[in-house]
Amino acid sequence: MYNLIMTIKEISESLNVSISTVSKALNDATDIAEDTKQKVREYAESVGYKMKVKNKAPRRICAMYERVNSDTRNNILNHVISSFTNEAIASGCEVMIDYAVTKPDDFNLNEYLVQNNFCAAFIVGMNFKSRIYKQIKSCTVPTVLLDNQISDAPLVSSISSENTIAIVSAIKHLNKNGHTKIGFLMGEKDSQVSAERLAGYIFGLARFGIEFNSDYIYYGDFTKSSGEAAASFFTKTDVTAVICCSDIMAMGLIDGLKNEGKRVPEDMSVIGFDDLNLLKFTSYNLTTMKQDFNRLGEEAFKVLAEMLEGRTAQHIMLKCKLIERGSVKPLN
Image 1: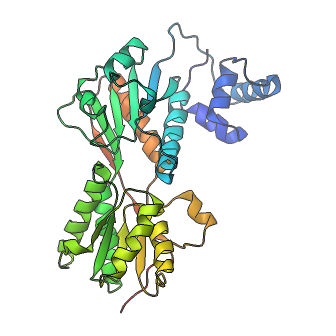
Image 2 (image 1 turned 120 degrees about the horizontal axis):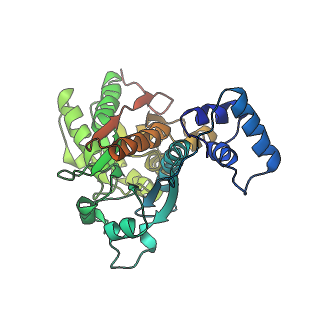
């Protein structure tokens, strides 16, 4: 077997093929065309990629979705899982993707991981009401959570975006453009992400001397339909701008406002959160807080790999970036 290091990523980029294709070619897998295998191997040898025999089986990692939905939130999770998997494969690990929703009611996460010889786990899509939420602390293998931080769990790390700071930045941008009556379209109540972004909303208002008004908050659930429903709510207030906990809700809000006879940004400014790729193919022209989904997956694996080498659990937060488009109108 070849000694898999980050060079495998460079090979994939140079040959314009996937990391998994390079990995399979270097390890003489049978489910890859011989000409592709030869092309990869010849290139690897030309750049000095050395073969090293390993005596032990690759580490097995479980990447588990706690929930599976058909909405865009799940597409975000897919993006992160894909990035994580690529990094794991590049480091010689085997990744198995599974779904907690398919498990029986008495499913025990720790027993499942141990019995299936997983050395580590990456769990996404979990909220406070998830049935495995209370089981996380008892995990006996290194585990990384996406968008959830659990204290007093020595084998559990977490990776997330700087949700609170990002919302403060969104308020700063609106305030700079003269907005002081700012609404907030929250995600599901049981989500740590929603809680952190709500905290950013409250803190951001205080930071810029804007009075907090609980009547400016609408509780959605990360779906487009909840954004559409929020439109009638906000049109009954005097808000001039709304910050949304996700792009998909922002898109729903814009559609709902249109149905209410309101235009964005002429009648109401809107800011989203995520910077989904699909925005490139729509006319929403949405100003948003960009998450780096590739880095979330990459850093999740990096943290997990460090834990497997004996490092203690840690919480990593990645910066978000304001992407200015055309859904915010200056009032001054």
